[in-house]
Image (spheres, rainbow over the protein chains, first blue to last red):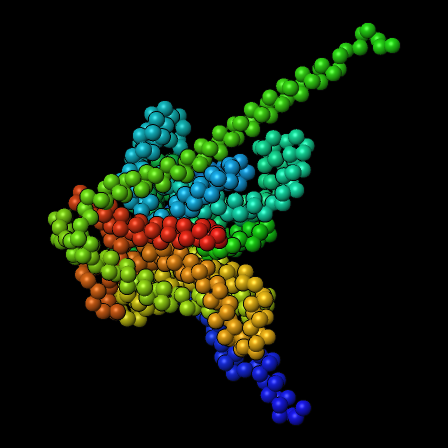
Amino acid sequence: MSSKSKEFLYKHLSGKRKSDKLFRNIVIAAAAYTILMVLLVVYSVVQGSSEIFSFEGLGFLTGTDWNAVEGRESFGAFPYIIGTLVSAAIAMAIGVPISLGIAIFVSEMSPARLATPLSFVIELLAAVPSIIYGLWALFVFRFWIRDLIELPLYNTFHGTIPLFAKYPFGLDVFTTGIVLAIMIIPIVSSIFREVMKVVPNSQREAAYSLGATRWETVRIAILPYARSGILGAAILGLGRAVGETMLVTLIIGNVTGAAAIPTSLFSQSQTLASLIANEFNEASSDLHLSALIGLGAVLLMLTLAINIGAQILVKKTVKVPTGGGIE
Amino acid sequence: MTSPKAPDYRNVIQEQMRRNLRKRMMINNLISVYAIVCIAAAIIPLGSILIEVVKNGAGVLSFDFLTQPQGSIGSGKGGIGPAIQGTLIVVGLASAIAAPVGILAGIYLSEFGGNGIFSYAVRFLNDILTGLPSIVIGIVGYVTIVLLLGSFSVTAGALALSIIMIPIVVRVTEETLKIVPHSLREGGYALGISKAKITLFIVLMSAKSGVLTGIVLGIARIAGETAPLIMTILGTSLFFSTFTGPVDALPLRIWRLASQPYESAHSFGWGAALVLILLVLGLNVGLRLLAYKKGFQIKAEV
C-alpha cells in the first residue's frame, strides 16, 4: 500500500476527521458551560454580598437586627437561619416517616396493579408548582391546621407546655413545616422507592423463608440494606425544604429582626429565602440589597453542604438520576 | 419409659409460639394500616389542591381574562394576558438556551466523556446545580444581567430559568443515550460513518422520545418557578415590549395577586393558578401517559 493511501485510511478511519474534532469540541464546550454556570452562581453570590460582609463582617451571621433605615443600618442573618432550620426540621419530622410509609407500601406491600397508579399520583404532587401549594396553604389549608390541630393543642396545653404557648393564627412555623413536608414527601418517597428497589430479592426471600412477616422482612432485610440511601434521600429532602421560597413567604408570617426567632411552634417567623423574596423589590439601598444577597450566600453554603452530603450517601447505595431520568 | 412428672414441653412451646405469632401479626397489620394512612396523607392534599383551584378558578376564566391586561388594582376588571404572554416568552427563551446545551452536554457524558475526571466533575456539579434553591439562582440573573443593564429584564429571567433546566436535560439525555444498544453505533462505524454523524443521526435519533421527555419535564418545572423571577423580570401589568425591560409571568402574578387584600384579586389569583396548573400538569400527565404506552418509565425528579 502506498504511503498516501495509508495516510488516507488513517485519517478517515481512526476518528481524526475534522468534523469529528469540531463536534467533540462542541460537546466539550457544552459540558464546560454547565460547570461555568455553577461558577457563575458562586461568583454572583459572592460579588453581590461582598458589600454587606465588608460592612458587618462575620457579625452578619450572628446579628439579630434588621434595620434598613438610612444612617442606622444594621443587618443580621441569625434569626432567619434559625427560622429556616426550625421550619425545615418540622418538615423532616413529619415528612420522612410518611415518605417511608409510602415507599414501604408501594414497593413492598401493594399489588403491582395498585403500585403504578399510586406512584403516578404521588409524582404528580411533585409537579405542582410551589406557588400553588402556597396559594392553597394561605387560603385553605392553614384554617384546617389552625382549627384541627393548633387550637386544640393551644387550649389544652398553653399554660403548661411553652411549645404551645402562643395563640395560633395558622400563619406560623408549624403550618409552614407541615406544608413543606407535603411538598417534599413525593420527592423523598420516590427516592426511597428507588433505593428499596435495588435491594436484591434474595434478601427478601431469605427473610420470608425464615417465616418473617412482611414488616419483619422490611425491618431486618430491606431497611438495613438501604440505610445510607434512605439517609441520603432524607437529606436531599432537607435541601429542598431549606431552599423553598414562595410557599414559605405566603404562610410563615414574615416578621423581621429578633422577633423572627421562633419561641413556640405557633410563632411567626421568617426564613432566609422568604426574606429575600419579600424585600428584594422594596430594597431601599445598595447595602440593603447586598444584605439580601448575603442571606442568599448563607443559604447557598447551607444547601451546598446538605446536597454534597446527600449525593455521597445516595450514590453509595444506588445511582439515582437527579434529573427527570428515564429507565 | 417416660417419667410421669415430665411437663408437656410441646404444648408449652406451641402455646408460646402461638402467642408470639399473634403479636407479630398484629404489629405487621398495624404497620400496614400506618402505610395506608401515609398514602392518604399524600393524596388528600393533592385532591384538595385540585378541587380548590378548579372550584375557585373556573369562575373567572373567560376570553378577556386570558387576553386582557390587568385592570386597576382591586377593580376586578381585566385579565392576566401579559402574565401568560410573559411566561411563554421567558420559558421559551430559557428552553432555547437549556435544550441545546443540555443535550450536547448529555451527549458528551454518554458518548465522549467516559469516566474521566472532567465528566465526573460535570456530573457532580450538575447534581449540585439541581439541588440549589431557585432563589439563589435568581441572584445570578440579577448580578450578571440586571445590574449590567440597569433594568429588570426578560433575558435575566431566561438565564436564571435556563440554569434550573439545564441539569434536568443533561441527566435525562445521558441516561437515555446510555441505553441505546451498542450494536447501533458499531453498525455505523462499520459503514465508515464519522462519529459526529453516528451520534447525531443514529444514537440521538433512536433516543429522541426520551430526550424530548427530558425537555418537556424541564419546561414543566421552570414554568412554575417564581422565586428567580422576582429578582430578574420583576413583573408588570403591561404586555411585552422589549428584551431589556420587565415582563410578567404567571407564577409571579399569582404571588402578587395573593398578597393583595382584595377578594377580586384573590379570585384572579385562583384563575391564574388554574391556568398554570393546567399547563404544568397537562405537560406531566401527557408525557407520563405517553411514556406508559411506549413502555418506558420516567423516574422521579430529584
